[in-house]
Length: 260
Ligand code: ADP
Ligand code: MG
Image (cartoon, helix red, strand yellow):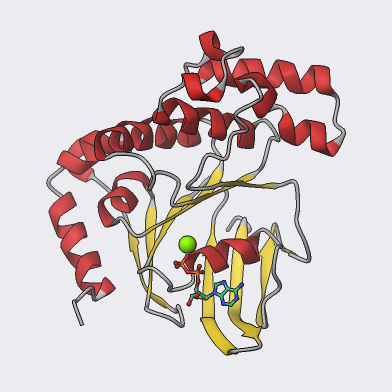
């Protein structure tokens, strides 16, 4: 058996503040294989972003431990790249200058970073927009530029925190398809956090369902589309597959979304 890329072992997290204590996550255990694409779904406030902050080393667990390549996470690591809901591109920098920003902050070799950035932007269909400013790009193009900026730092692990939430539905479908395809092609280990069940099913190899706060692992589902052939289909084909409605219904029921 190959070693897990990521492992959560009985992880708990409590936030302490003057107004009291919030238990965000309780006894979280799961592991992710190298190159696997996992989606984590759960309702708003169940601890999804907290889970990614722990993996990034931005906060430390109250109990348990988190391992990357068998080594405990003790702080931020260049091996982990994060992509957020807001693309947070700097409006006064060109697309290229945005993509190389991380390398600049790290004091890395800028000529090499610029070459990597241009190659990535070409691959992501933004080759003609290298010198453009962010406000000249559509929402979907901006998200691709944000992905290029994350990828330019050559992370081993890619974390996506509701990256498409700010986009309209149509853009969201196509950008999820493109970004899913890019992540698979580059063979990165990835975690997508979302409250959108169809998006999770369409993109991931496995879906982990979190309970309401404190977030616990409620269930896990391997996602496969045998009706679409041996290879994993793209997200748009996955959404149309005969397996999709059953997967959706199962996960929907587990999420226990009811109006109170
Ligand atoms: P999600 O991403 O699933 O919406 P979060 O991980 O952001 O959930 O938050 C989980 C819970 O922890 C929420 O109740 C939130 O209010 C609380 N929380 C998040 N960050 C902090 C913080 N820095 N201090 C105190 N409580 C926090
Ligand atoms: Mg969140």
